[in-house]
Picture (cartoon, rainbow, N blue to C red):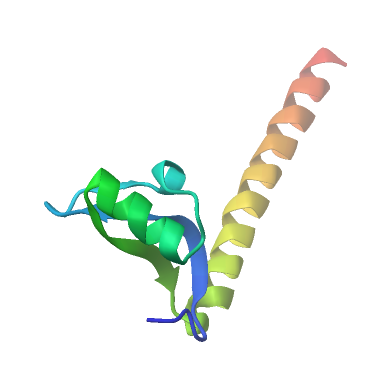
Length: 87
């Protein structure tokens, strides 16, 4: 299935006959005959990729922004409190 309007998580690889997920490093060929031969030679039966629906993109962006912004504020507050105690 093509990516379409999804956005990739960056996690992808190969699947063995037993269903185990492995890194794509064993068969680094993007496609074609070399990839099929490599996959067959190593016992892989399919490829996988993890993706999120396009509609979730901004929800993840705002969640990351809130988390990292909150952490930055906490660190700033701790810094200010520690500096005030020294002065």
